[in-house]
Image 1 (tube, rainbow, N blue to C red):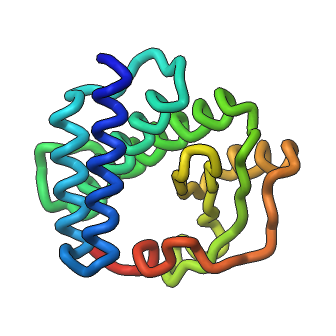
Image 2 (cartoon, rainbow, N blue to C red; image 1 turned 90 degrees about the vertical axis):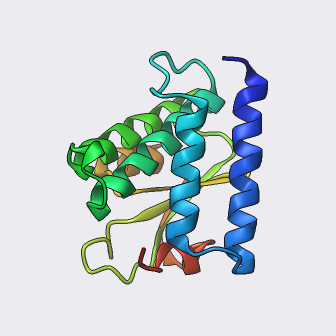
Amino acid sequence: MNVNALQKYFQYRQALIEQYIRGDMTKREYLDKNLDAVFSLRKTPFEQVDSVDKGLFNYQYFNALAKEAFTGRDCYFGKDADYYYHKKDGATAAVLQLMHYRGVSAYMIHARSRFLNGKLFEIVLEDYGMILHCANRRIRERLEEEGVFCPEKRLSLIDGYINQRY
């Protein structure tokens, strides 16, 4: 797969986000279209993550599957959402390592979900214009070690999306 295909996916995803922000689609519609886009690009994640773009694609791939499995709407995805979230964490860790934690800031965010409140943090990849979310303790500890994690809770940069049900 060439870099252009990945860039086209990320451009399409950004267009979907803009449509969602404008109110042209619901969160569920955004999630469905993003999942379709992920699968149209690749039926499987990258096995070898040797670039940030491949890692970010894998993050999106596993995040889309986790959300689909979490909603339980489609038995095709069969596996537990936790499995996909675990794989997403692996993609997150790979991206951060490839970036050497440069151009990264992270902080705890306010979450309306009782399950996620106090656990969910936001990772901003400034050079990529990407926002990742994670609740993995080991990733948080590594971000703290690298000096890029702020423990003070903040409002998510995409609070309306994060705290909206789907």
